[in-house]
Image (cartoon, rainbow, N blue to C red):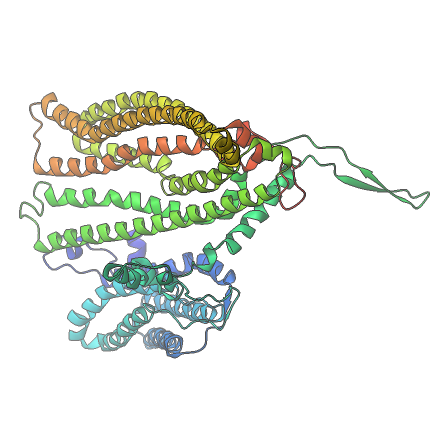
Length: 636
């Protein structure tokens, strides 16, 4: 029914499978080329334009000078607008002379006029607001060039031999090279802006001046990598951090949301003013004290760094979906009467090979960008936490200082904050691993049928085993943290009273006490290492056991089941997909246990209140008030 509507829209066939798929020389219909291949790139630009608008409005740079690059972009965009206007005028002229002109010949040029005009506006505002490169515009021209290649081939092979399509041929021969030129121009970054809210630095990071293509492939990092390959790197060889990642930018953003959290959870009396009409006086009375409520840095972290984390999660979702594209592309290659058997045209084999290559490349690029975003978020969270703990340490009361040593505070800022940075990159595995396993089992069910339940049973059996091991590791982590705090306290006492120890020759006595505590720590660490090794071994064998049980059950359950190339290769590719999430789950669980227990010691939690990293993941069970934590005011 939809094809019939589109056929009337174009006055020709919209889709013809015999022309496109079941042929040795494939070709898309002119209606499909004039509608879908034109509308899809334009729709992409309009749909994602709010994201570009967000970056334009929040840019802290201004006024890129006019240069050959942005002038050429505007001129070429104007040329495309003029060509589209000429195409629309030609359609009107033919219609007025009695020729049959389809609706697509009117609407497609109009859509291109609006879209190219909008892209020119984006170019102007990117220059004004100091954006040196635009990922949206690059992807728009890339999609437009890829879609236009089909039409370009059609014009060369078909339209060039027909006299009545001479105008269409000449117009597109001018249009498509301009599109390719725009794609080439968007591969380069614009000139540096004249004004920036960020202070100038001695060695700015080249990522700031890199184009979208350079950022995608990380080519801006190549000079430093080559220099490190040739000679050892020194401090002077390193660049300054990106302005967005510095403490001067990260900490105020976190402080804004943290102060809001404190105000909401504060139990300070709120003053109220009342006006007496009879006397004309204003009486100020202290309001009722609000009920003590919970406060945690988790909401502040989510509000400050949540958007970047969500964008990284979207990239992870795209990567997970693309992971299952290769097995689905491989399936028609190996199926009966397929390309593998030589019963299909050779161009389909090339098409499947190109699709698998493109899918793998895009998946790699998306995954690398995901980890880049996640490590940036982890770095910013670590920066905010270290700054918060440090500033709180400067405002600690004398009673709090007696309960927390300098070593414990340094341990919070160095070791414990680092664990959050390590966890951030893999936190999405909480939903990504089950999603990948569920999709893999779904596709395996289509390939092997109920035999996949045998592999599922193996995974279910391994889950309680991992749960028991995780609980044991949690217990060992608690013991290890207690021993560590005890040793740090004793070492602090030794260092603070070293003169007395030397005077009375108490070194052997304190040395034996420290070694005893250290032996306890080593014993706990050995037990944890054995458990980690056992968990790693079990879950490393899990993908092999799952695939072995599923394939063996498929072959043995029915004599008619034959493990041919299609089922074997597709199943193995899906089992290989399962391997990563199954192997990552135990490490993620162990890492989360370490993060949740990094500040288990009660005195540290009491001294730092909600700033204790223990409360970030355990905030429902721990609460503080504004009187417990004074950030930026008087000491607690």
